[in-house]
Image (spheres, rainbow, N blue to C red):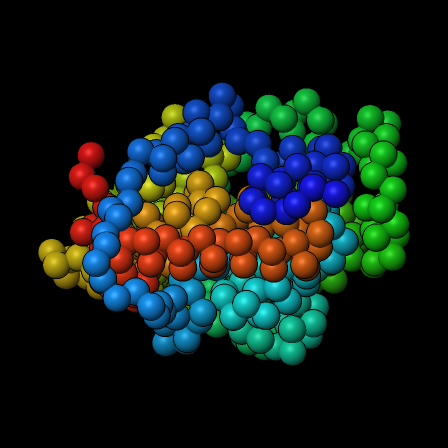
Length: 387
């Protein structure tokens, strides 16, 4: 068996383990995938500044996020239907994040519910992601459930007023609600271990919705309900209402414009996530890493010009510890990975997610040292070469 050294290795293993339609769902982008490619290409345009002649015998990756100590400024992004990559996927990923002491984010449209994730991790704090929907009674109950599950922050995603067109999903016939055909059934049958694991779990529904939406008792009906309920164009006034109802830390995800970042802060955001949804929404939008410095300058804690003091998080395109270090140098307070840990999950379950996290941790630590730095909290633009 070939050695597992890189995220690409995990990706190749996941491709062999996960039915094609679900693997393609995780790995593909929207339309021509230009933004998906730009997310990676623009990281490669940034160059780390190697420094020597310094005592780098010790290094510190620890950081604080919302007052909580973590082992490094890395978090796992919310992934819809993660439990279709591997049975009980959300629980496995949450356990891996807990073991590594980094934040985990659970999607509204997860297969395992927030209650199941909380119980499986002994109520270890995690971030709960929310898509705003019309039914405020459901939202209020959802927030109460999140508090009872010991969620440390709420993340609301704004960059999905409508779903970007993803050609791979169309070719595979993957729809919301799902309507499995013979081609898809064959793809699943070609992954017998995946099938056995799925047969061994009861979690094959949208766990956060099942049992909480009246008269909707199967996957297709719940998916249709969610699609119809999702608000097309969430307003800042609605974000203010959500902040007031939640009362805790609020993260606004999907920011790709300085003016929107400032409005998010005015609406009550404690952090924004600079993100283009991993290149899965507006194709032709800029990469997240190229926009990050502008958002930091506008609202970030690390900006000398900003008067708003908001945490700036970043996702979309991070695959390595070097990518992560570049984002931190440009002012990000926290970096998220999505596809990278999805590949680990598909390749080897919880162990695969732990492998992903450890790969990135080692890469980050070594790169920090080679840049002549010893504290991840003190890196900055001075650690990058000017273009």
